[in-house]
Length: 453
Ligand code: SF4
View (tube, rainbow, N blue to C red):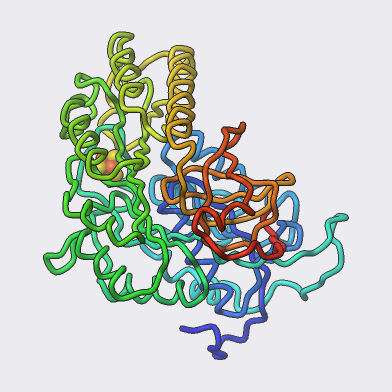
């Protein structure tokens, strides 16, 4: 069904999206936004002006599940006329509870997310109130426009592994992949819409398999059959790394960035987590990647306080994390989830111990990130300029360094510049006026306004 379909007697709605959780959820919500906009609807920049609130929930921790419920209730409190759709992993993990939330008008489980727009059309055949641009509760109306810089494309979903802490096999089912044509067509249309970077995402994209072809063949197809200037990969399982991917960097379009989920640097903890690798195997993989692709950013996820994690195990995990010099560490305190093996274990780590270990892990992660930035100072990098923020312009390098400059830049422009000095939230690049000297002859153009400060 397309946006021009007039069989539905539905007026355009203003839709506010709330998203929680992982990059996969983010990919899905961005696709939903595009579907609603193509369907003639508008994206609202505030809940008070919205007719419809789509909450893409998460259940990876009990905090994420609680926040999903809170966001639903907050929407209705701010705007009693709002219709609310709840979708995402919290719906699949706790369907009865999701259906029982009084403020929810429509529940859409993950497996029907692709049909969410059609289900909304059926559930709410008419717009719930006339559109108005008048201020509501003192908040002026401002439509939100999709900013075409960087976006995510889902290539696969689900998981056949059984890591002891993880609820994903329960909430997203068995692993399945989209076809080459589906992915290529989506990337092609995003490139045509002006996006400069696409991030291929999924639960763990190294499981991608379609007609005997894996992630390497898909990346080749995307680069060969689309004009997307920059392609980034996320969530690669460390035990399933295809070394042929390292040959593709010569194209200059694949971002020098791999996200390899470590989860713990202690072999004893990894074993209880049912992760099929050791810290040595992980270190060998990282060493091999770095030897082939200098200056590559390797980012990771770490769980702190998994059941039975002793102080010694935590120390091993911390020491290993420091040794790996990750470009970014996403650390999470372990959270017991229903339907997982770890939830049945008895020796859970005390809350205050988890909190204290989290602080140490986060500090180690910050130090490593800044050390990575420091190593890259003086190098010339490719930057995608994204948006203004507090008097600066923000961009992202292909090797995942957040950069800034006080000199106005053009949104959605790829340019190169030299990394000059470390600031609080990223690295400042050399005065863009000097870029001609560095090989980029395009003069800086006036800035374009962005609605995403
Ligand atoms: S953590 Fe394990 S079970 Fe969960 S999605 Fe990743 S590989 Fe699958």
